[in-house]
Length: 300
Image (tube, one colour):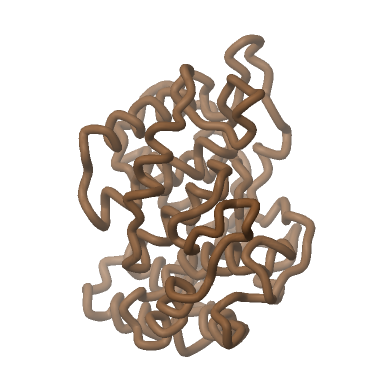
């Protein structure tokens, strides 16, 4: 089968995004497929694991990657319909009942805690699922560093990190999509984007060296971790105008396509998983979908 047929021979979470991003399917067809995420496959399986109290695996942060933080992010990344009855029941339970631990302020879940890499993901999920937080918006905008990005370890660090910056950028973009932009969120996104672009999406500004070789390996789910495909996916979603600063990252992605037009899952993050969606080292529908829509955006 060709690549599109192969992608469609999969879970509803992948199928609806393939229909939306890689075919000319009508909005009604896309919406109908998206509705299945909450009742079939991976999305339904994740919803079924929620505890009666509203958490997943009994905690907000631990254990990775089955706790509430990571499961809610994964539901977001699957594109589960936030308006489906199943999703609304689950997320409303989180919003009402789940608090961060006392050392993190005992905040309600969608008002976040203290680390930018966590708060960016909570902020994105809150906006997506209908619980946008102005508390987190103002906190994240106010926590930018002088170089334009964010870091979980401030102080003592005075330099931004790729991991924290991509998490916050995704959160700000999701908030602007759901609620609308403000002058402050737009400016914060602009400087965060500049931080990544000045570094060619993977290199140190000081030496030009690749910061972390793992960033050249393609993974899903991503959790808090950066890689070049995640960076490119953000700029695609943000509607950025491609320029030369994307060229190395794009060439890296193009060079990983196999003879059948597919991409492999090259890296998985160690830790407990609810279930394995795809095996590492094998052709991956998630990576292929994400790579194809990035290349379509860049070469449009």
